[in-house]
Image 1 (tube, helix red, strand yellow):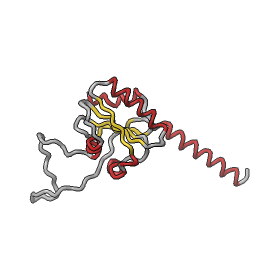
Image 2 (cartoon, rainbow, N blue to C red; image 1 turned 180 degrees about the vertical axis):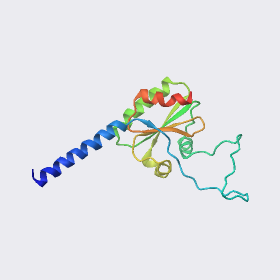
Image 3 (tube, rainbow, N blue to C red; image 1 turned 135 degrees about the vertical axis):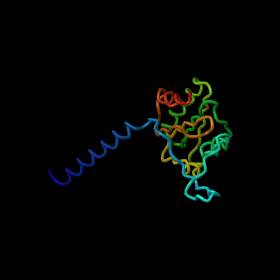
Length: 164
């Protein structure tokens, strides 16, 4: 075989591998994304140790919870499905239908859709790399899980089970 033929074969194999990996991971809920916040200064002599959080205080609002509030919505009693979409995203429409169905079926679950293009600063803070991305937030607004791509209804319902 000629060099050009080997290059074509290598390109096809690489494209096939990338496509299979994406098909295997699209719509799967994974762990959370850690949002880094600036470290707070501790007023104790031991600068290397952080103070234990007070158990009766509410945790600070996460960027995702701030975004839900800024969009004029409230967090769900059990969970909030926060969907990041863009205008010309076909999988976003399918994701919207699935998440609306789950919010209608499961009591205490709210669905909030956010246009990623209009909230770029928060998209960067939350770590959204592509649309659709769905975040599952607990009642306090803390991220429990996330999925990129269009999830199935069964996958969304299964991601809500830890919040029961």
